[in-house]
Image (tube, rainbow, N blue to C red):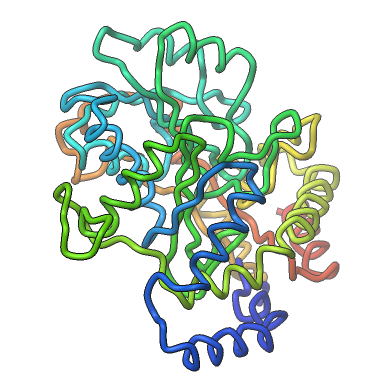
Length: 366
């Protein structure tokens, strides 16, 4: 069986160093917000080119804390509207509604699956104060046109960088393009922990300080609580594991790009719509390789019968989920078509050449 993502094989490469990190932590006697977290925060800030990196519990918390901090700082007000791609994972939208802000769903660009700036422009109102911009599947969602749009409408821009760590736009990494960015280190991400984890990056001193305070029970000094906070801190051990893996991220992303290039060059079945490979290859880290087909369930079953595991990212659009039943009658045709037809193929830095070839040959024979 060709696994969709072989996490055991990925982490086996770093086993010795990961075990040593575990031993170091046990011996240190300092298990929360210690030296390993501080080290990883410094490394992540340096990697992205950001002034600040703050470790938090997970990717959803990262986005939630950014918006909550903006509310505390008065840069957002309850009831403000936040533009967000309609075809994103639901976490992006949950972070907005959790904070008493109003998500405004924007249909994507059909070529990139990322934000359509023109579509966003048609939805701007006097209440629109921010854009939550998602780098979906690992492709950078940024352009000169987007920058002009943000400036014209005086919008805060929060990057959802859960899937695109290491991607670049004009030599600048995601996580350092907008005003603030949320990261996820869920085990299956390009930079994955061995459990949940997340981070916030920003160049805004005031925002960084507020995110730290809110994520630590609303406290900067022990037992003195400035605001009503939460407990959202990146675990010391996970931070240590991420420090082990971060130096190899660019190399692993390069392997993903090579596999994606081979898929695009060699998959020739007319029943399959392939993603576009950007002219600047650094703009995509291929967290997911997502094809589209009208016969998704049939194709997925066929691939499984031939020993190839696939997943669907994502089978149900956020506006069709019971959690947002107030939107269930909303019709967003492009988003709905995407969720009906997408299928994610195996892609990872530990795929062997024969596995890639088998995926291609099996798809072409379908």
